[in-house]
Image (cartoon, rainbow, N blue to C red):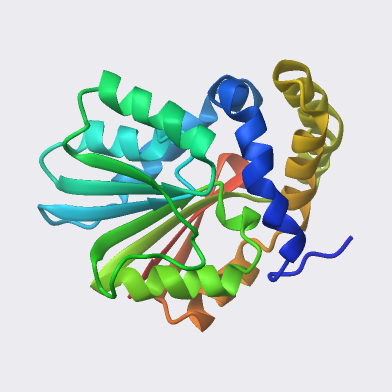
Length: 239
């Protein structure tokens, strides 16, 4: 199966994420061996160096990233918005936000990353973690991110990738194809969802290919930061 950066079969993903929402956080911790926590810290380390940041987190899910960033940088982030197509995910996120005492800082809303309701040049930073590969049209989403960023604003995109080292790559592909669907399906009760996850990871452009997509969307100073031998990559680009 070849990957297309325009894949309208992915329209099923909101319903799929609604189904797995109750176990999503638990399965994420298990399947990433808690590495996702350190990956989110890396996102925080690349936030723009300025105060009163306006932040938008796309494909926010249950809000892990936006909550972590607002907790870690309470004086630098003024307001944050989390946007996702899955209402069930957002409901869980809202409860987590209330528990952390962040209701005044973080707003969560249903929205489509390909057609954002926000005005042009609104945000200092736009983040998206493990969500860009699920959108039906990746170039359109990147253009939307670019549109809502202020001049000199920054995009930070965290996504799974395939290691370049042959030995690590072989072991990682075995994990994606055989371990991840089994464990994810066992804990969530939805084996199809985690087979879908495996397929999207394997077929998504990464490293130089994804950097090129960002450049074509208009981003400058595009960089890729491989994490843990390249099983995930953090991309950054400036407007």
